Image (cartoon, rainbow, N blue to C red; front, side):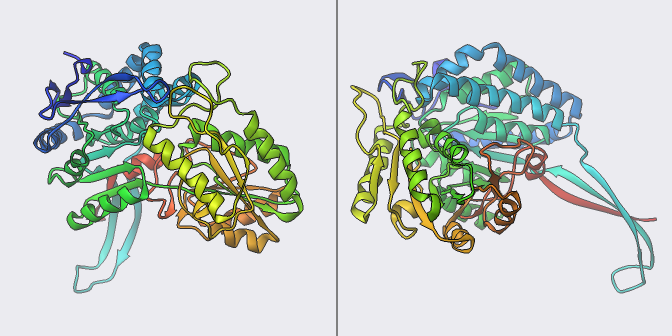
Length: 486
């Protein structure tokens, strides 16, 4: 029995859904890729109960056992790499290169990384402390140990923009730390996550350690969050949904890890290498059709180079080939759905009404089918426009001028979001000085590159907590102190 039959994965078994099935659509062709199961609320709670039952035994397994399963799962995902990448491409609309290199390959690498993470130290001896006699205890020397314990049952609610790397970045470190999981994928592209579950089951993960429930109804996600068997929620998605999840978690004191929206600022100073800045901004805001929360969608440019940068960015946007994801020269494929295409295009029209000038894009790409949006550059913008303040989550970038460093930093920080910002300057000292003043979880100085051991997460409405590298292991653990007389 396989997930291809449209079943849920609960307690180590493939289970027929109570709610039937719904279609998963290829955003490039508008054709049905497959049918996803619609879980009932009761089935979601069954999955959480199975994870609760499996938690005790799994949390006590030796690191070698957990690591071996994660490594075998990575091997099996790699074995089926071509098929996995094609499925990811079909259900997300990502280009073939993105599906292979940034989705499946990154997912596999994360399982391998956290197989090693199972061996990372979970105990830290603390310096002995001399206490004087008092009402809370006797005098003497006391030793202490800080121990990382698994949180328990973790609900992983994943985003549609990367159905391999995003779930892997939650499931792998959670399992490595000894947690059990209930995975609730985004409804638009859940099929890849079932392939991940198949690999884990074949790799020997015990029954109930990994569970996958899906559904187009918000009730499925709500049940996965509010189940009394769930101790923690790890969520990637919109700030609005994250706020609703936080309310539920707050009522029940559930732990949270949330990567939410972004409206990244890219500060370009007048001494910057403009070609480097344009390449970085253009590459990132167009990647996966702009459906990434780390995109620099607010470009803040010092007035001395403003016009030149706008000209160069407009030229770059016009160079980007929009088309079928399977074509070798395609850079920008479709967005995830017709509704999202309409939403993105409505923001372009809103920008026009607010007084912005469309200097590139803005038109509907001349394609017969698919949910495509042209890479669009809006100039003559101010930071109080809605197109500058709200996350569009598409290939649309706004340009805002500033006079000096003080104004540039103030504009960058004048946002509800604070996930990932960027600074381009020929003065490296200024680049690092400005970076430290930005209220963002991460800052790239003269680069869009990422270090995959660096902590990742947001300030303000961009999220709660940090993951990636060892920080993900910390996120899926609780700190316990053990004290004894020395």
